[in-house]
Length: 280
Image (cartoon, rainbow, N blue to C red; front, top):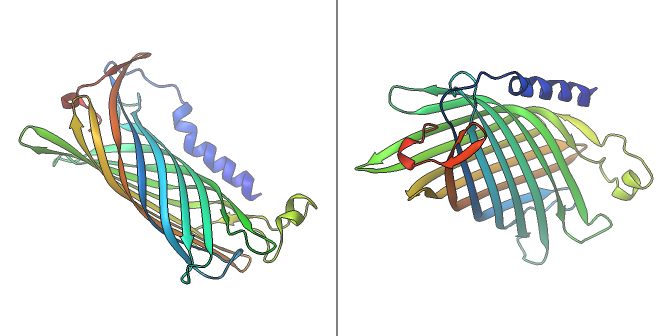
């Protein structure tokens, strides 16, 4: 029943993108960015250990923001794909925990332009996470992670002009509200769940009380010819409580990458000069 409700809400969120669009006579700006990130992280997974671990995290990401054809580009879509690897140690430095996570986010946003030039994008999103944590200790050396959530998303863009040099400041906030996540019973092994078929209580309904996720990404784009150098900061926090088990993962990372701005005219794509990026 929980999964059925989640599927219905997902289709409701994505329905506007499937409606027949009015073709805009103008261009459709697109911003794609590729980046690497590195920073610190902290993780606790009581299925594996009751001790918190702190360490070093690295990752890579791809972001695509595209203006919609609907209502003169007043709507935009955002796709975000990230992969992250964390190596963390306990306080005594004699045990390590490894975490591999993959994250996908889709945002559907309505654009509002303020008189000061600030552009606000507000809407809904779909977030999916999958991965594993690993210690190599005990009878259960690893724990699988999987979540899918629906929530709210917001984005702010401002183009700062320093003499004749434009700098684009962008901030993204994601806050899922409801969803489903996987969490085994306390003490249950994956051998029982996936070999013997004892999967009772494995999938749970999620809300901020037992499945909290907050993500914020702040970036600055510095144009260099037809591309931009991107630097930024990303902060993520994921917390899950179920079946007397606790999982918390906090990371803060610095971003360095390249942003490429394009324009779509019909089915063709052309490079868009920095001074006419209508999305900004």
